[in-house]
Length: 238
Image (cartoon, rainbow, N blue to C red; front, side, top):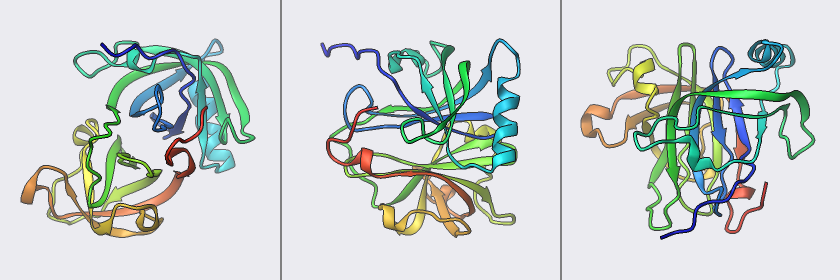
């Protein structure tokens, strides 16, 4: 039986204003070898944590916000049904990257985990996709794509997106996005040099849906995060 993962600091990117989404900052070493997307909300003793965060993002226009959580075991977050087993944890919210001169915004914030969008441990037997592949998530007017991380060397990338109107493919409703579907970007190999960039208009398809999943047209918005170094062989530690 494999040894249980130890407690660790699992840094997370934060995107979204009306709804906060957390994207675990992964590496190819235990216990950080997971890609995780969570729908969450912030609370604190003053009762204004979510509003402080959203107002700061709107006012400053900063792209990167990160969370430095308390040390905990990441696998505690998800139960056998794939949904939250541990429904809250505490941490400190930063404008910028907490390891790279970020500014502390909220200390001792409580993160309420509302929904597990994606939770996957990396598998060294996995096969890298031949086409550029992203996980889609979000709701309402706030929709995002997170690059599907598989094998080193790889890259972590999060951008805003919207679905182009009038395209014949599957509608990416809030219900569809709730489950973090994987989308392939037509005609692009899976590498950082071919990543999505702001203003791209691309054809995409839902992974595993065959012809029913083709025909999506996406328009990309702001780039929130790009990291290659920590997903090189060996990586670094938080």
